[in-house]
Length: 191
Image 1 (tube, rainbow, N blue to C red):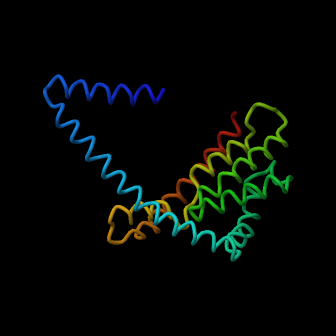
Image 2 (image 1 turned 90 degrees about the horizontal axis):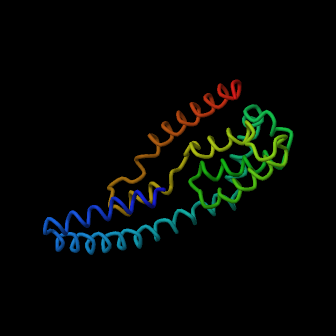
């Protein structure tokens, strides 16, 4: 559906530009924007490689394992049904830990594994369990200790201090995660 919406927006803009005699301006804008987008992506790739390397060092040094060890008791209290399955809880912990460190690429396989494990212990196959819904919410609004992707984008865009967003990101994602958990726990009682 979103493809149709975007197509409609772009097509109507182009048609409006052509009918108002602004076709040359549209062509020039398209060429300039693609050129700047390409430059931005190339600069972003270098910065992303750096942050992925830093995160790989954190993973190899055991930092992610230490964070996972700290999270496990907290998650056992939050995920009542899944606390019985070490496989499910382990995948959830690793997914959330990777997300906290800004490693969304590394978090994806753990997220898929967590959902598979949660489905294995689910009594109603084909219907998301309360823990599955809670995990999805926590995955979507995970607390960001180091928002490396946003820092990389800010650095590629020429920000003077790209890491200044660490504290605001930590506060906003913590609030979002807490609110998400509370909403899930409240809704679990009714649905």
